[in-house]
Structures are given as C-alpha cells and as structure tokens.
Length: 164
Image 1 (cartoon, rainbow, N blue to C red):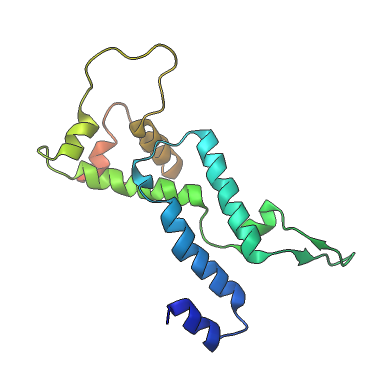
Image 2: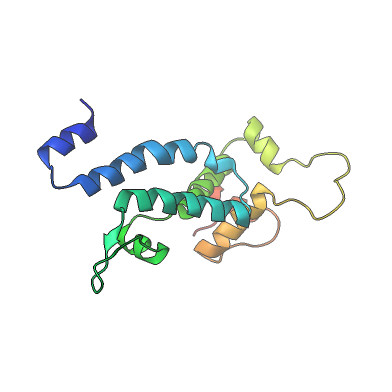
C-alpha cells in the first residue's frame, strides 16, 4: 500500500493533509522536471503561478462564507495564507541557484561547464536578445541577497570565492 493510503486509514480526519501531500509528491515533480535549466520569462512565471493556484483551489475546495453562508472559491491571497510552503516560482529559482553552484564547482573539462562559460560563434538574430539562463541566475541572486557584480563574478559564489 502506498504511504498516502496508509495515512488516510490512520488519520481519516486529515484528508486535506493527504491532498496536499499527494499534490506535492505527484504533480510538482512532473511540472518541475529539469527546471534548473529553464530561463523563465515573466509570462512563464505567471503561467506557473496560475497552475499552482488551480491545483490549490482543487485541494482546498470551496469555502462557506462566514456572513452570508454562501459557497465561494478562495482567492489567491487566502490560498497563499492556507498553503505555507513556498510558491512554485520560488522553488524554481532556488533550484536554479543550487544548480548554478553545482555547475560552477565542476572542472573545466566537463561539458556543462564549457557550455556555461563558452561564447557561441556567429551572428545573433535581429531584435531584442532573448533572456539567457545566466541573466536569470543574476536576477535570482540579486533578489536573494543583492550580491552580483559584473561579468562572471557570480560564478565565484559557487566555487567558494564569495558568500551569500
């Protein structure tokens, strides 16, 4: 028997905890597979938040109003109050920073490290440059601790040359 089924029979009054547990262990790993290498735009971040709010609305369900007694859906602020774990965008950003530190500690002979610090040859397409993974890492580090210089100075954090 699975762990959530056992929990259901042991604690039948904790259906909400089981719903949260199953959504965290089944849906999020599928959605976040490979998120360490994503370069998210603001639109994609919004879409991830919308997905998470839909899942949470299904988990928590409608609530009866205190004054009128009518059933209503929970708004996003109430959902974030009920759901104490960090939101999905924050999870993506933290995993991306962890992966950046891991890649920074890799040796120069590793392919992933060479892709990270290498410069592609050829001409760039016209128009605004697309958001790069490196740009996302710099923005994430600025949000976390305000520690980012110019160039590859953020790479020193992963190799032990700087501290968060």
